[in-house]
Each structure stands twice: as structure tokens, then as C-alpha cells.
Amino acid sequence: MPDNRVIVTDESTGQSLELPVIKGTEGEPTLQIKALPSTLGYFTYDPGFTATASCTSKITFIDGGKGILRYRGYPIEQLAEHSNFLEVAYLLLEGELPTAAEFEAFDREITYHTMIHEKLRTFISGFHYDAHPMAMMAGVVGSLSAFYHDKMDMDNPKHRRLAAIRMIAKMPTIAAACYRHHMGWPAVYPDNSLSYTENFLNMMFSVPSEKYEVSQVAAKAFDLLFILHADHEQNASTSTVRLVGSTGANPYASVAAGISALWGPAHGGANEAVLTMLAEIGDVSRVGEFIDRAKDKNDPFRLMGFGHRVYKNYDPRATIIRQAAHEVLQEIGSDDPLLSLAMELERIALEDEYFISKKLYPNVDFYSGIIYKALGIPTSMFTVMFAIARTVGWVSQWLEQEDVGTPIGRPRQVYAGAAERDYKQIGSR
Ligand code: ACO
Image (cartoon, rainbow, N blue to C red; front, top):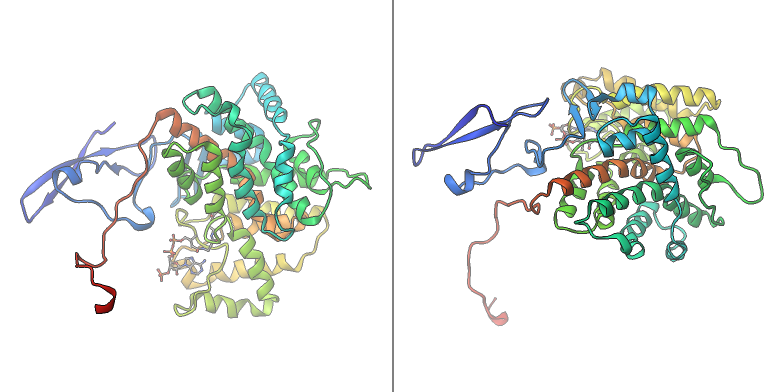
């Protein structure tokens, strides 16, 4: 609730307006500007929404300056150490940590929905074998509304929740099916005796001709990575999901749009871009050259995996994942030269005045790709891993928005095109 005010005065007319200040539980005070156009006749201009809150949310809190990330109040460090991905999914969806009985019921509910319609597999097989998996994911998830239209009354809270559960449950099955299509491998169906991440790894990598044992190191690492990627308040893809959802579009269409937004290299596509960049650098001796390119204003090259819109301090997820990257590589005995290259890049960038002054630190995606690579995930699937985890955040945010009921998202613009002019016949132009 507002408890103090800021006064804006238009000096050309002398007219003033008191703007209420909204204070959340934590975070910066925010001005409520809704009355500006109707009273003073002004809109506000904020490309990239760097200073604009688009909603009120109770799900995730970030303090970018202090490097803090909390889901429903719980620090990410504690969740990473003590929780598991499905428990975090419950927390994000329901707002509280589950009791043992609630967790068991939730686990069963997710497990029950892991299968996908057989015709979806036919749909997947229609893609060219070398289609990018993110293109397939966006298409297949968007099509879910055509397969599961039985419970699609979005005014019904039970139907809304079921759609959310279905997406969390089916995403690993769809992702693995897309990968297997690319590889030309036969389908592997969900095995409900396995945990969420074990099941995913089994669907990805097991083949009929050989016994496949899910590596516990890999399952644990995936669980951690999924926890770290599960939500990140109003980032580009989540804002996309909310914006599409605000039109009344179905949740599958909304999440498909989120997947497309995530694909961009400035967002979730960065983990793939980091590996491409490391391969391009190729050798520790060339790190300096690429650092110089990143600093050169005339060169569009940026250090992938560095910088963040919100964190102007170390990304807390990067601290956790950096440690995990070392542990995983040690446990599986990998001596991937890309890791030493990444470490050298990190060391030099952290000592460089350009990166220090601009507060450009390694972000979560700087390290996630290295772990995925070590665990046998092909580079083109990295962002799909992110999408599986972030689905929990997308559907939690979508549910929160739908439960409250928000107006359609519709930003304004500053028109800078031609003023009114008369049409000329083609012969006289
Ligand atoms: N390498 C070199 N310079 C950079 C980098 C980088 N990775 N990131 C930002 N800068 C510079 C910019 O050139 C700019 O310099 P200037 O002030 O002299 O013009 C300054 O730092 C601020 O950059 P902005 O683009 O204004 O910062 P913004 O907050 O809009 O961008 C972003 C954040 C998109 C993440 C950016 O840092 C970037 O492109 N990083 C690389 C891609 C990446 O790793 N994305 C993953 C983000 S995390 C996630 O989605 C999970």
C-alpha cells in the first residue's frame, strides 16, 4: 500500500500531480504513474523496461546490487544445498515448502503426466532431422493446446493448475523426444520409477541395445542446474509469457512464446553462445585478443556469459554453479581444456578495468554450458535444458497473473515517423 508520495510538476502549466509510492516487502520503492496521462497528459519512456515494474509478484526476489536471489523468501544458496528440483517447483507454484505428504502427492501428480500423446511424436518426426531443438520445442509446446483441449477452461482454477502441471511433467519428455529425433534413435518412454532428472537422462540417453545406468553425478548436477534456473522474476521470457497470457491466450501458447524469447543469445541462448565462443577462442593464448575485442566499441563482439541486466554484482547462481562445475568435472574425471580456457577468461575479465567499472561479472550461463558439455549434452540442447527448468517459473508466474486477473499488456510508443501527408499517385512520386 502507498505510504508516501512524490510530486511531479509540469513547469509549462504549473500543474502538479502526486504520485503514490508503492513499497513491496523488499526492494526499491516504485512510483505509481497510472494517473500521469489522464492528468498531466504525459506518458513515460523506458525502452527495455529498465526502470519499470510490470506487475506485483510474490514469487521471486532479486537484489542485483547485493547479488541476492530468493524463491518465495528462501535464499537460492539454501535451496541449492538442501532442496531438490521438484520441491522447488512446488514452492514456486504453491508459495510454501511442502510437507512430506504434500511432496509425495505432488511427485505422483507430476509423474502421472509425464507421457505425451503418440501423435505428438508423429508431429516431432515431421521436423527435419537437423532442426534446432529450440525451434522444435517452441512448435511442439505451442501445439499442446491442440492435444489437451479437454481441460482448457482458463476461468477454472483447476484447469489452469492442470495445464501448469502438464507442462512441468511433459517438458523433459518432449525435450528428449526432440533430441532422439535428431539422433535418429527410437523413442524411450518415461519410467515413473525414476526421479524427475533421472527420468529425463534415461529418456535422453538410453538405447534398446544396451543397459543404461543413470549416473547419479549427472542426475544430481541436473537437479542443481534446474533449481538455479527455475525462476528469475520478470526476465524477458517470463515477461513474454505474462504478456501473451494477458491477452487470454492459452498457457501452452504463452509458454511457447516464452521458449522463443529464451532462445535469444542475450537471454537463455547465452549458454550455447558461451561454448561457441570458447571454441572460437580455442586456446588460452588467445584470451587477451578476445578481451580486447569485447572492449572495442567498434566491434559488436561481447563476452558471452558476462554481464546481466539486473545483477551488477556477482550472480549468486554463478557462485554456486562455478563450484559445481569443478566438482562435476573432477568426479567424472574430465580434463576438458575448455574449462581451463573458461577459468582464464574469467580471471582476466575480473581483473580488467573495463569489466570492473561496468560491473560485468560472469553470469549463470558462463558455467552451465561447461557442465552440460561434460555430461554429454550437445551444445544445441543447452537452451532446452534451461527451458525445462524455467517452465516452472513461467507457469508459476502465469498462474499468479491469471489468479489475480490483469489487464492486457499494451505498452505505448513515442512516434518518430513522418507527420501527416497526402497520398501521391504512383506516377507523381
Ligand atoms: N561483453 C562486453 N561488454 C559488455 C557486455 C559483455 N558481455 N555486456 C555488457 N557490456 C557493456 C556494453 O557494451 C555497455 O557498454 P557502454 O556503457 O560503454 O555502452 C555496458 O556494458 C552496459 O551494457 P548493456 O547492454 O546496456 O547492459 P544490459 O543490462 O542492457 O545487458 C546483457 C545485459 C544483455 C545480459 C549483456 O550484458 C550481454 O549481452 N551479455 C552477454 C550475453 C549473456 O551472457 N546473456 C545471458 C544473460 S543471463 C540469462 O539470461 C540467464
